[in-house]
Image 1 (cartoon, rainbow, N blue to C red):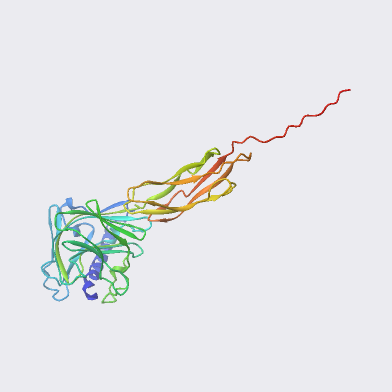
Image 2: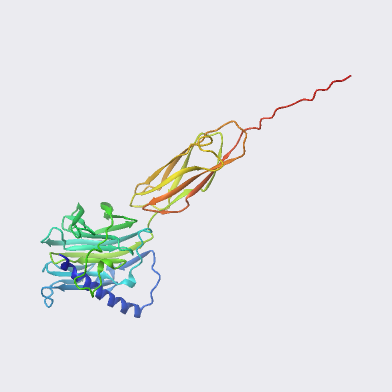
Length: 369
C-alpha cells in the first residue's frame, strides 16, 4: 500500500515551492502562541491562505475529478468520486510554528465528514497528519462513524490502531488534537474521544527517492485524502495551532517556616494552567540540618494532576522534641515531570525551635564567721 501515499510526497513538493515564493514576498515573523492557519470567514479556500492544495490520480493524471470549493462558511473538499485520487492540503512551512512536544501544542480544526467510502479497513477518506519537530505525532483517520489512529513504525505500519466510535457526519464539529510529551488527546466539541502514545512513521520509504518524505518533514500538518483505497466529501472550517500549552508544575511557596509544636502540615503543589492531559510529578522530602526520622518523617511519592485539576497536596509529618537546639531545615524536591514542564522545584522548610535552654543553677556556699 506504500504507493498509495505518493500524492502526499507530491503535495510536499508543491508546498516547498509555494513556501519559497512566500519567503521571497514576506519576511518571516516570530510566530505567536496561537497561529490561525485558515480563517474560513475570509471567503476563500485553504489554498488561498496558508495551505497548498494538490489533487493527483496516479492511474489517470489527466482526468481529475477531485475538487475544492468555498461555500460559506467552509471549504468543501471532495475526493469521493474516484477512490484512485489523492487530494488535500499541507501547510506552507513559513506559516507553521515549531511544534515542540515538551512545550506542548494543540491543533484546532472544524470538520464535518459529509460522506466517506473505503475499500480497505486500514484506510480512510479523510486523514489528519500532525508531526512535531522531532517527527513524532499521529495520523488520524476519519470514517463516517469512527475515528482511529494509524499504527506507526514496525510490521503494522499504517494499519488500524486505537479508535473511538463517533458520528462525524452529524454537523460541523470543533476538534482539538493536543500533544504534550509522548501523549496525544483528541476532543470533539469539548468531549474527550481518543488518547494514546505518539508514533513515528519514518519506516515508510517514498516510491521515488528524489522526492522528500512527508513523514520526515518536521512540523508537518496535512488535511485530506492520502490513499487510493478511499474517498470522502468533507467540510473544513477554521484551522489553528497553539504552542507552549504544557502546564508548569511549581512548589508554592519556596520557603516555609514551621513551628516545632505542630506534627502535621499540608504543602501544595500547583499547575499554572489546567491541562486536558493527565500530568504527574514525583517528589521527595530530604534532610538538611534536620534529621529524617528524628525531626521529620522522610517520604516520597507521585502526584497526579487529572484534567482540570490545578493543585495536589503533600502531607508532611514532623517529630517535635523538647530539646533546645538551633532552627533546622529540610527540603521538598520535585522531579521527573510527565506531560508538563518543571518550574520551581524546591521548597525549604525551617523548623523553628520553641524549647527553652536547660540550665543547672549553682548557688555559692558562703560560710560566715
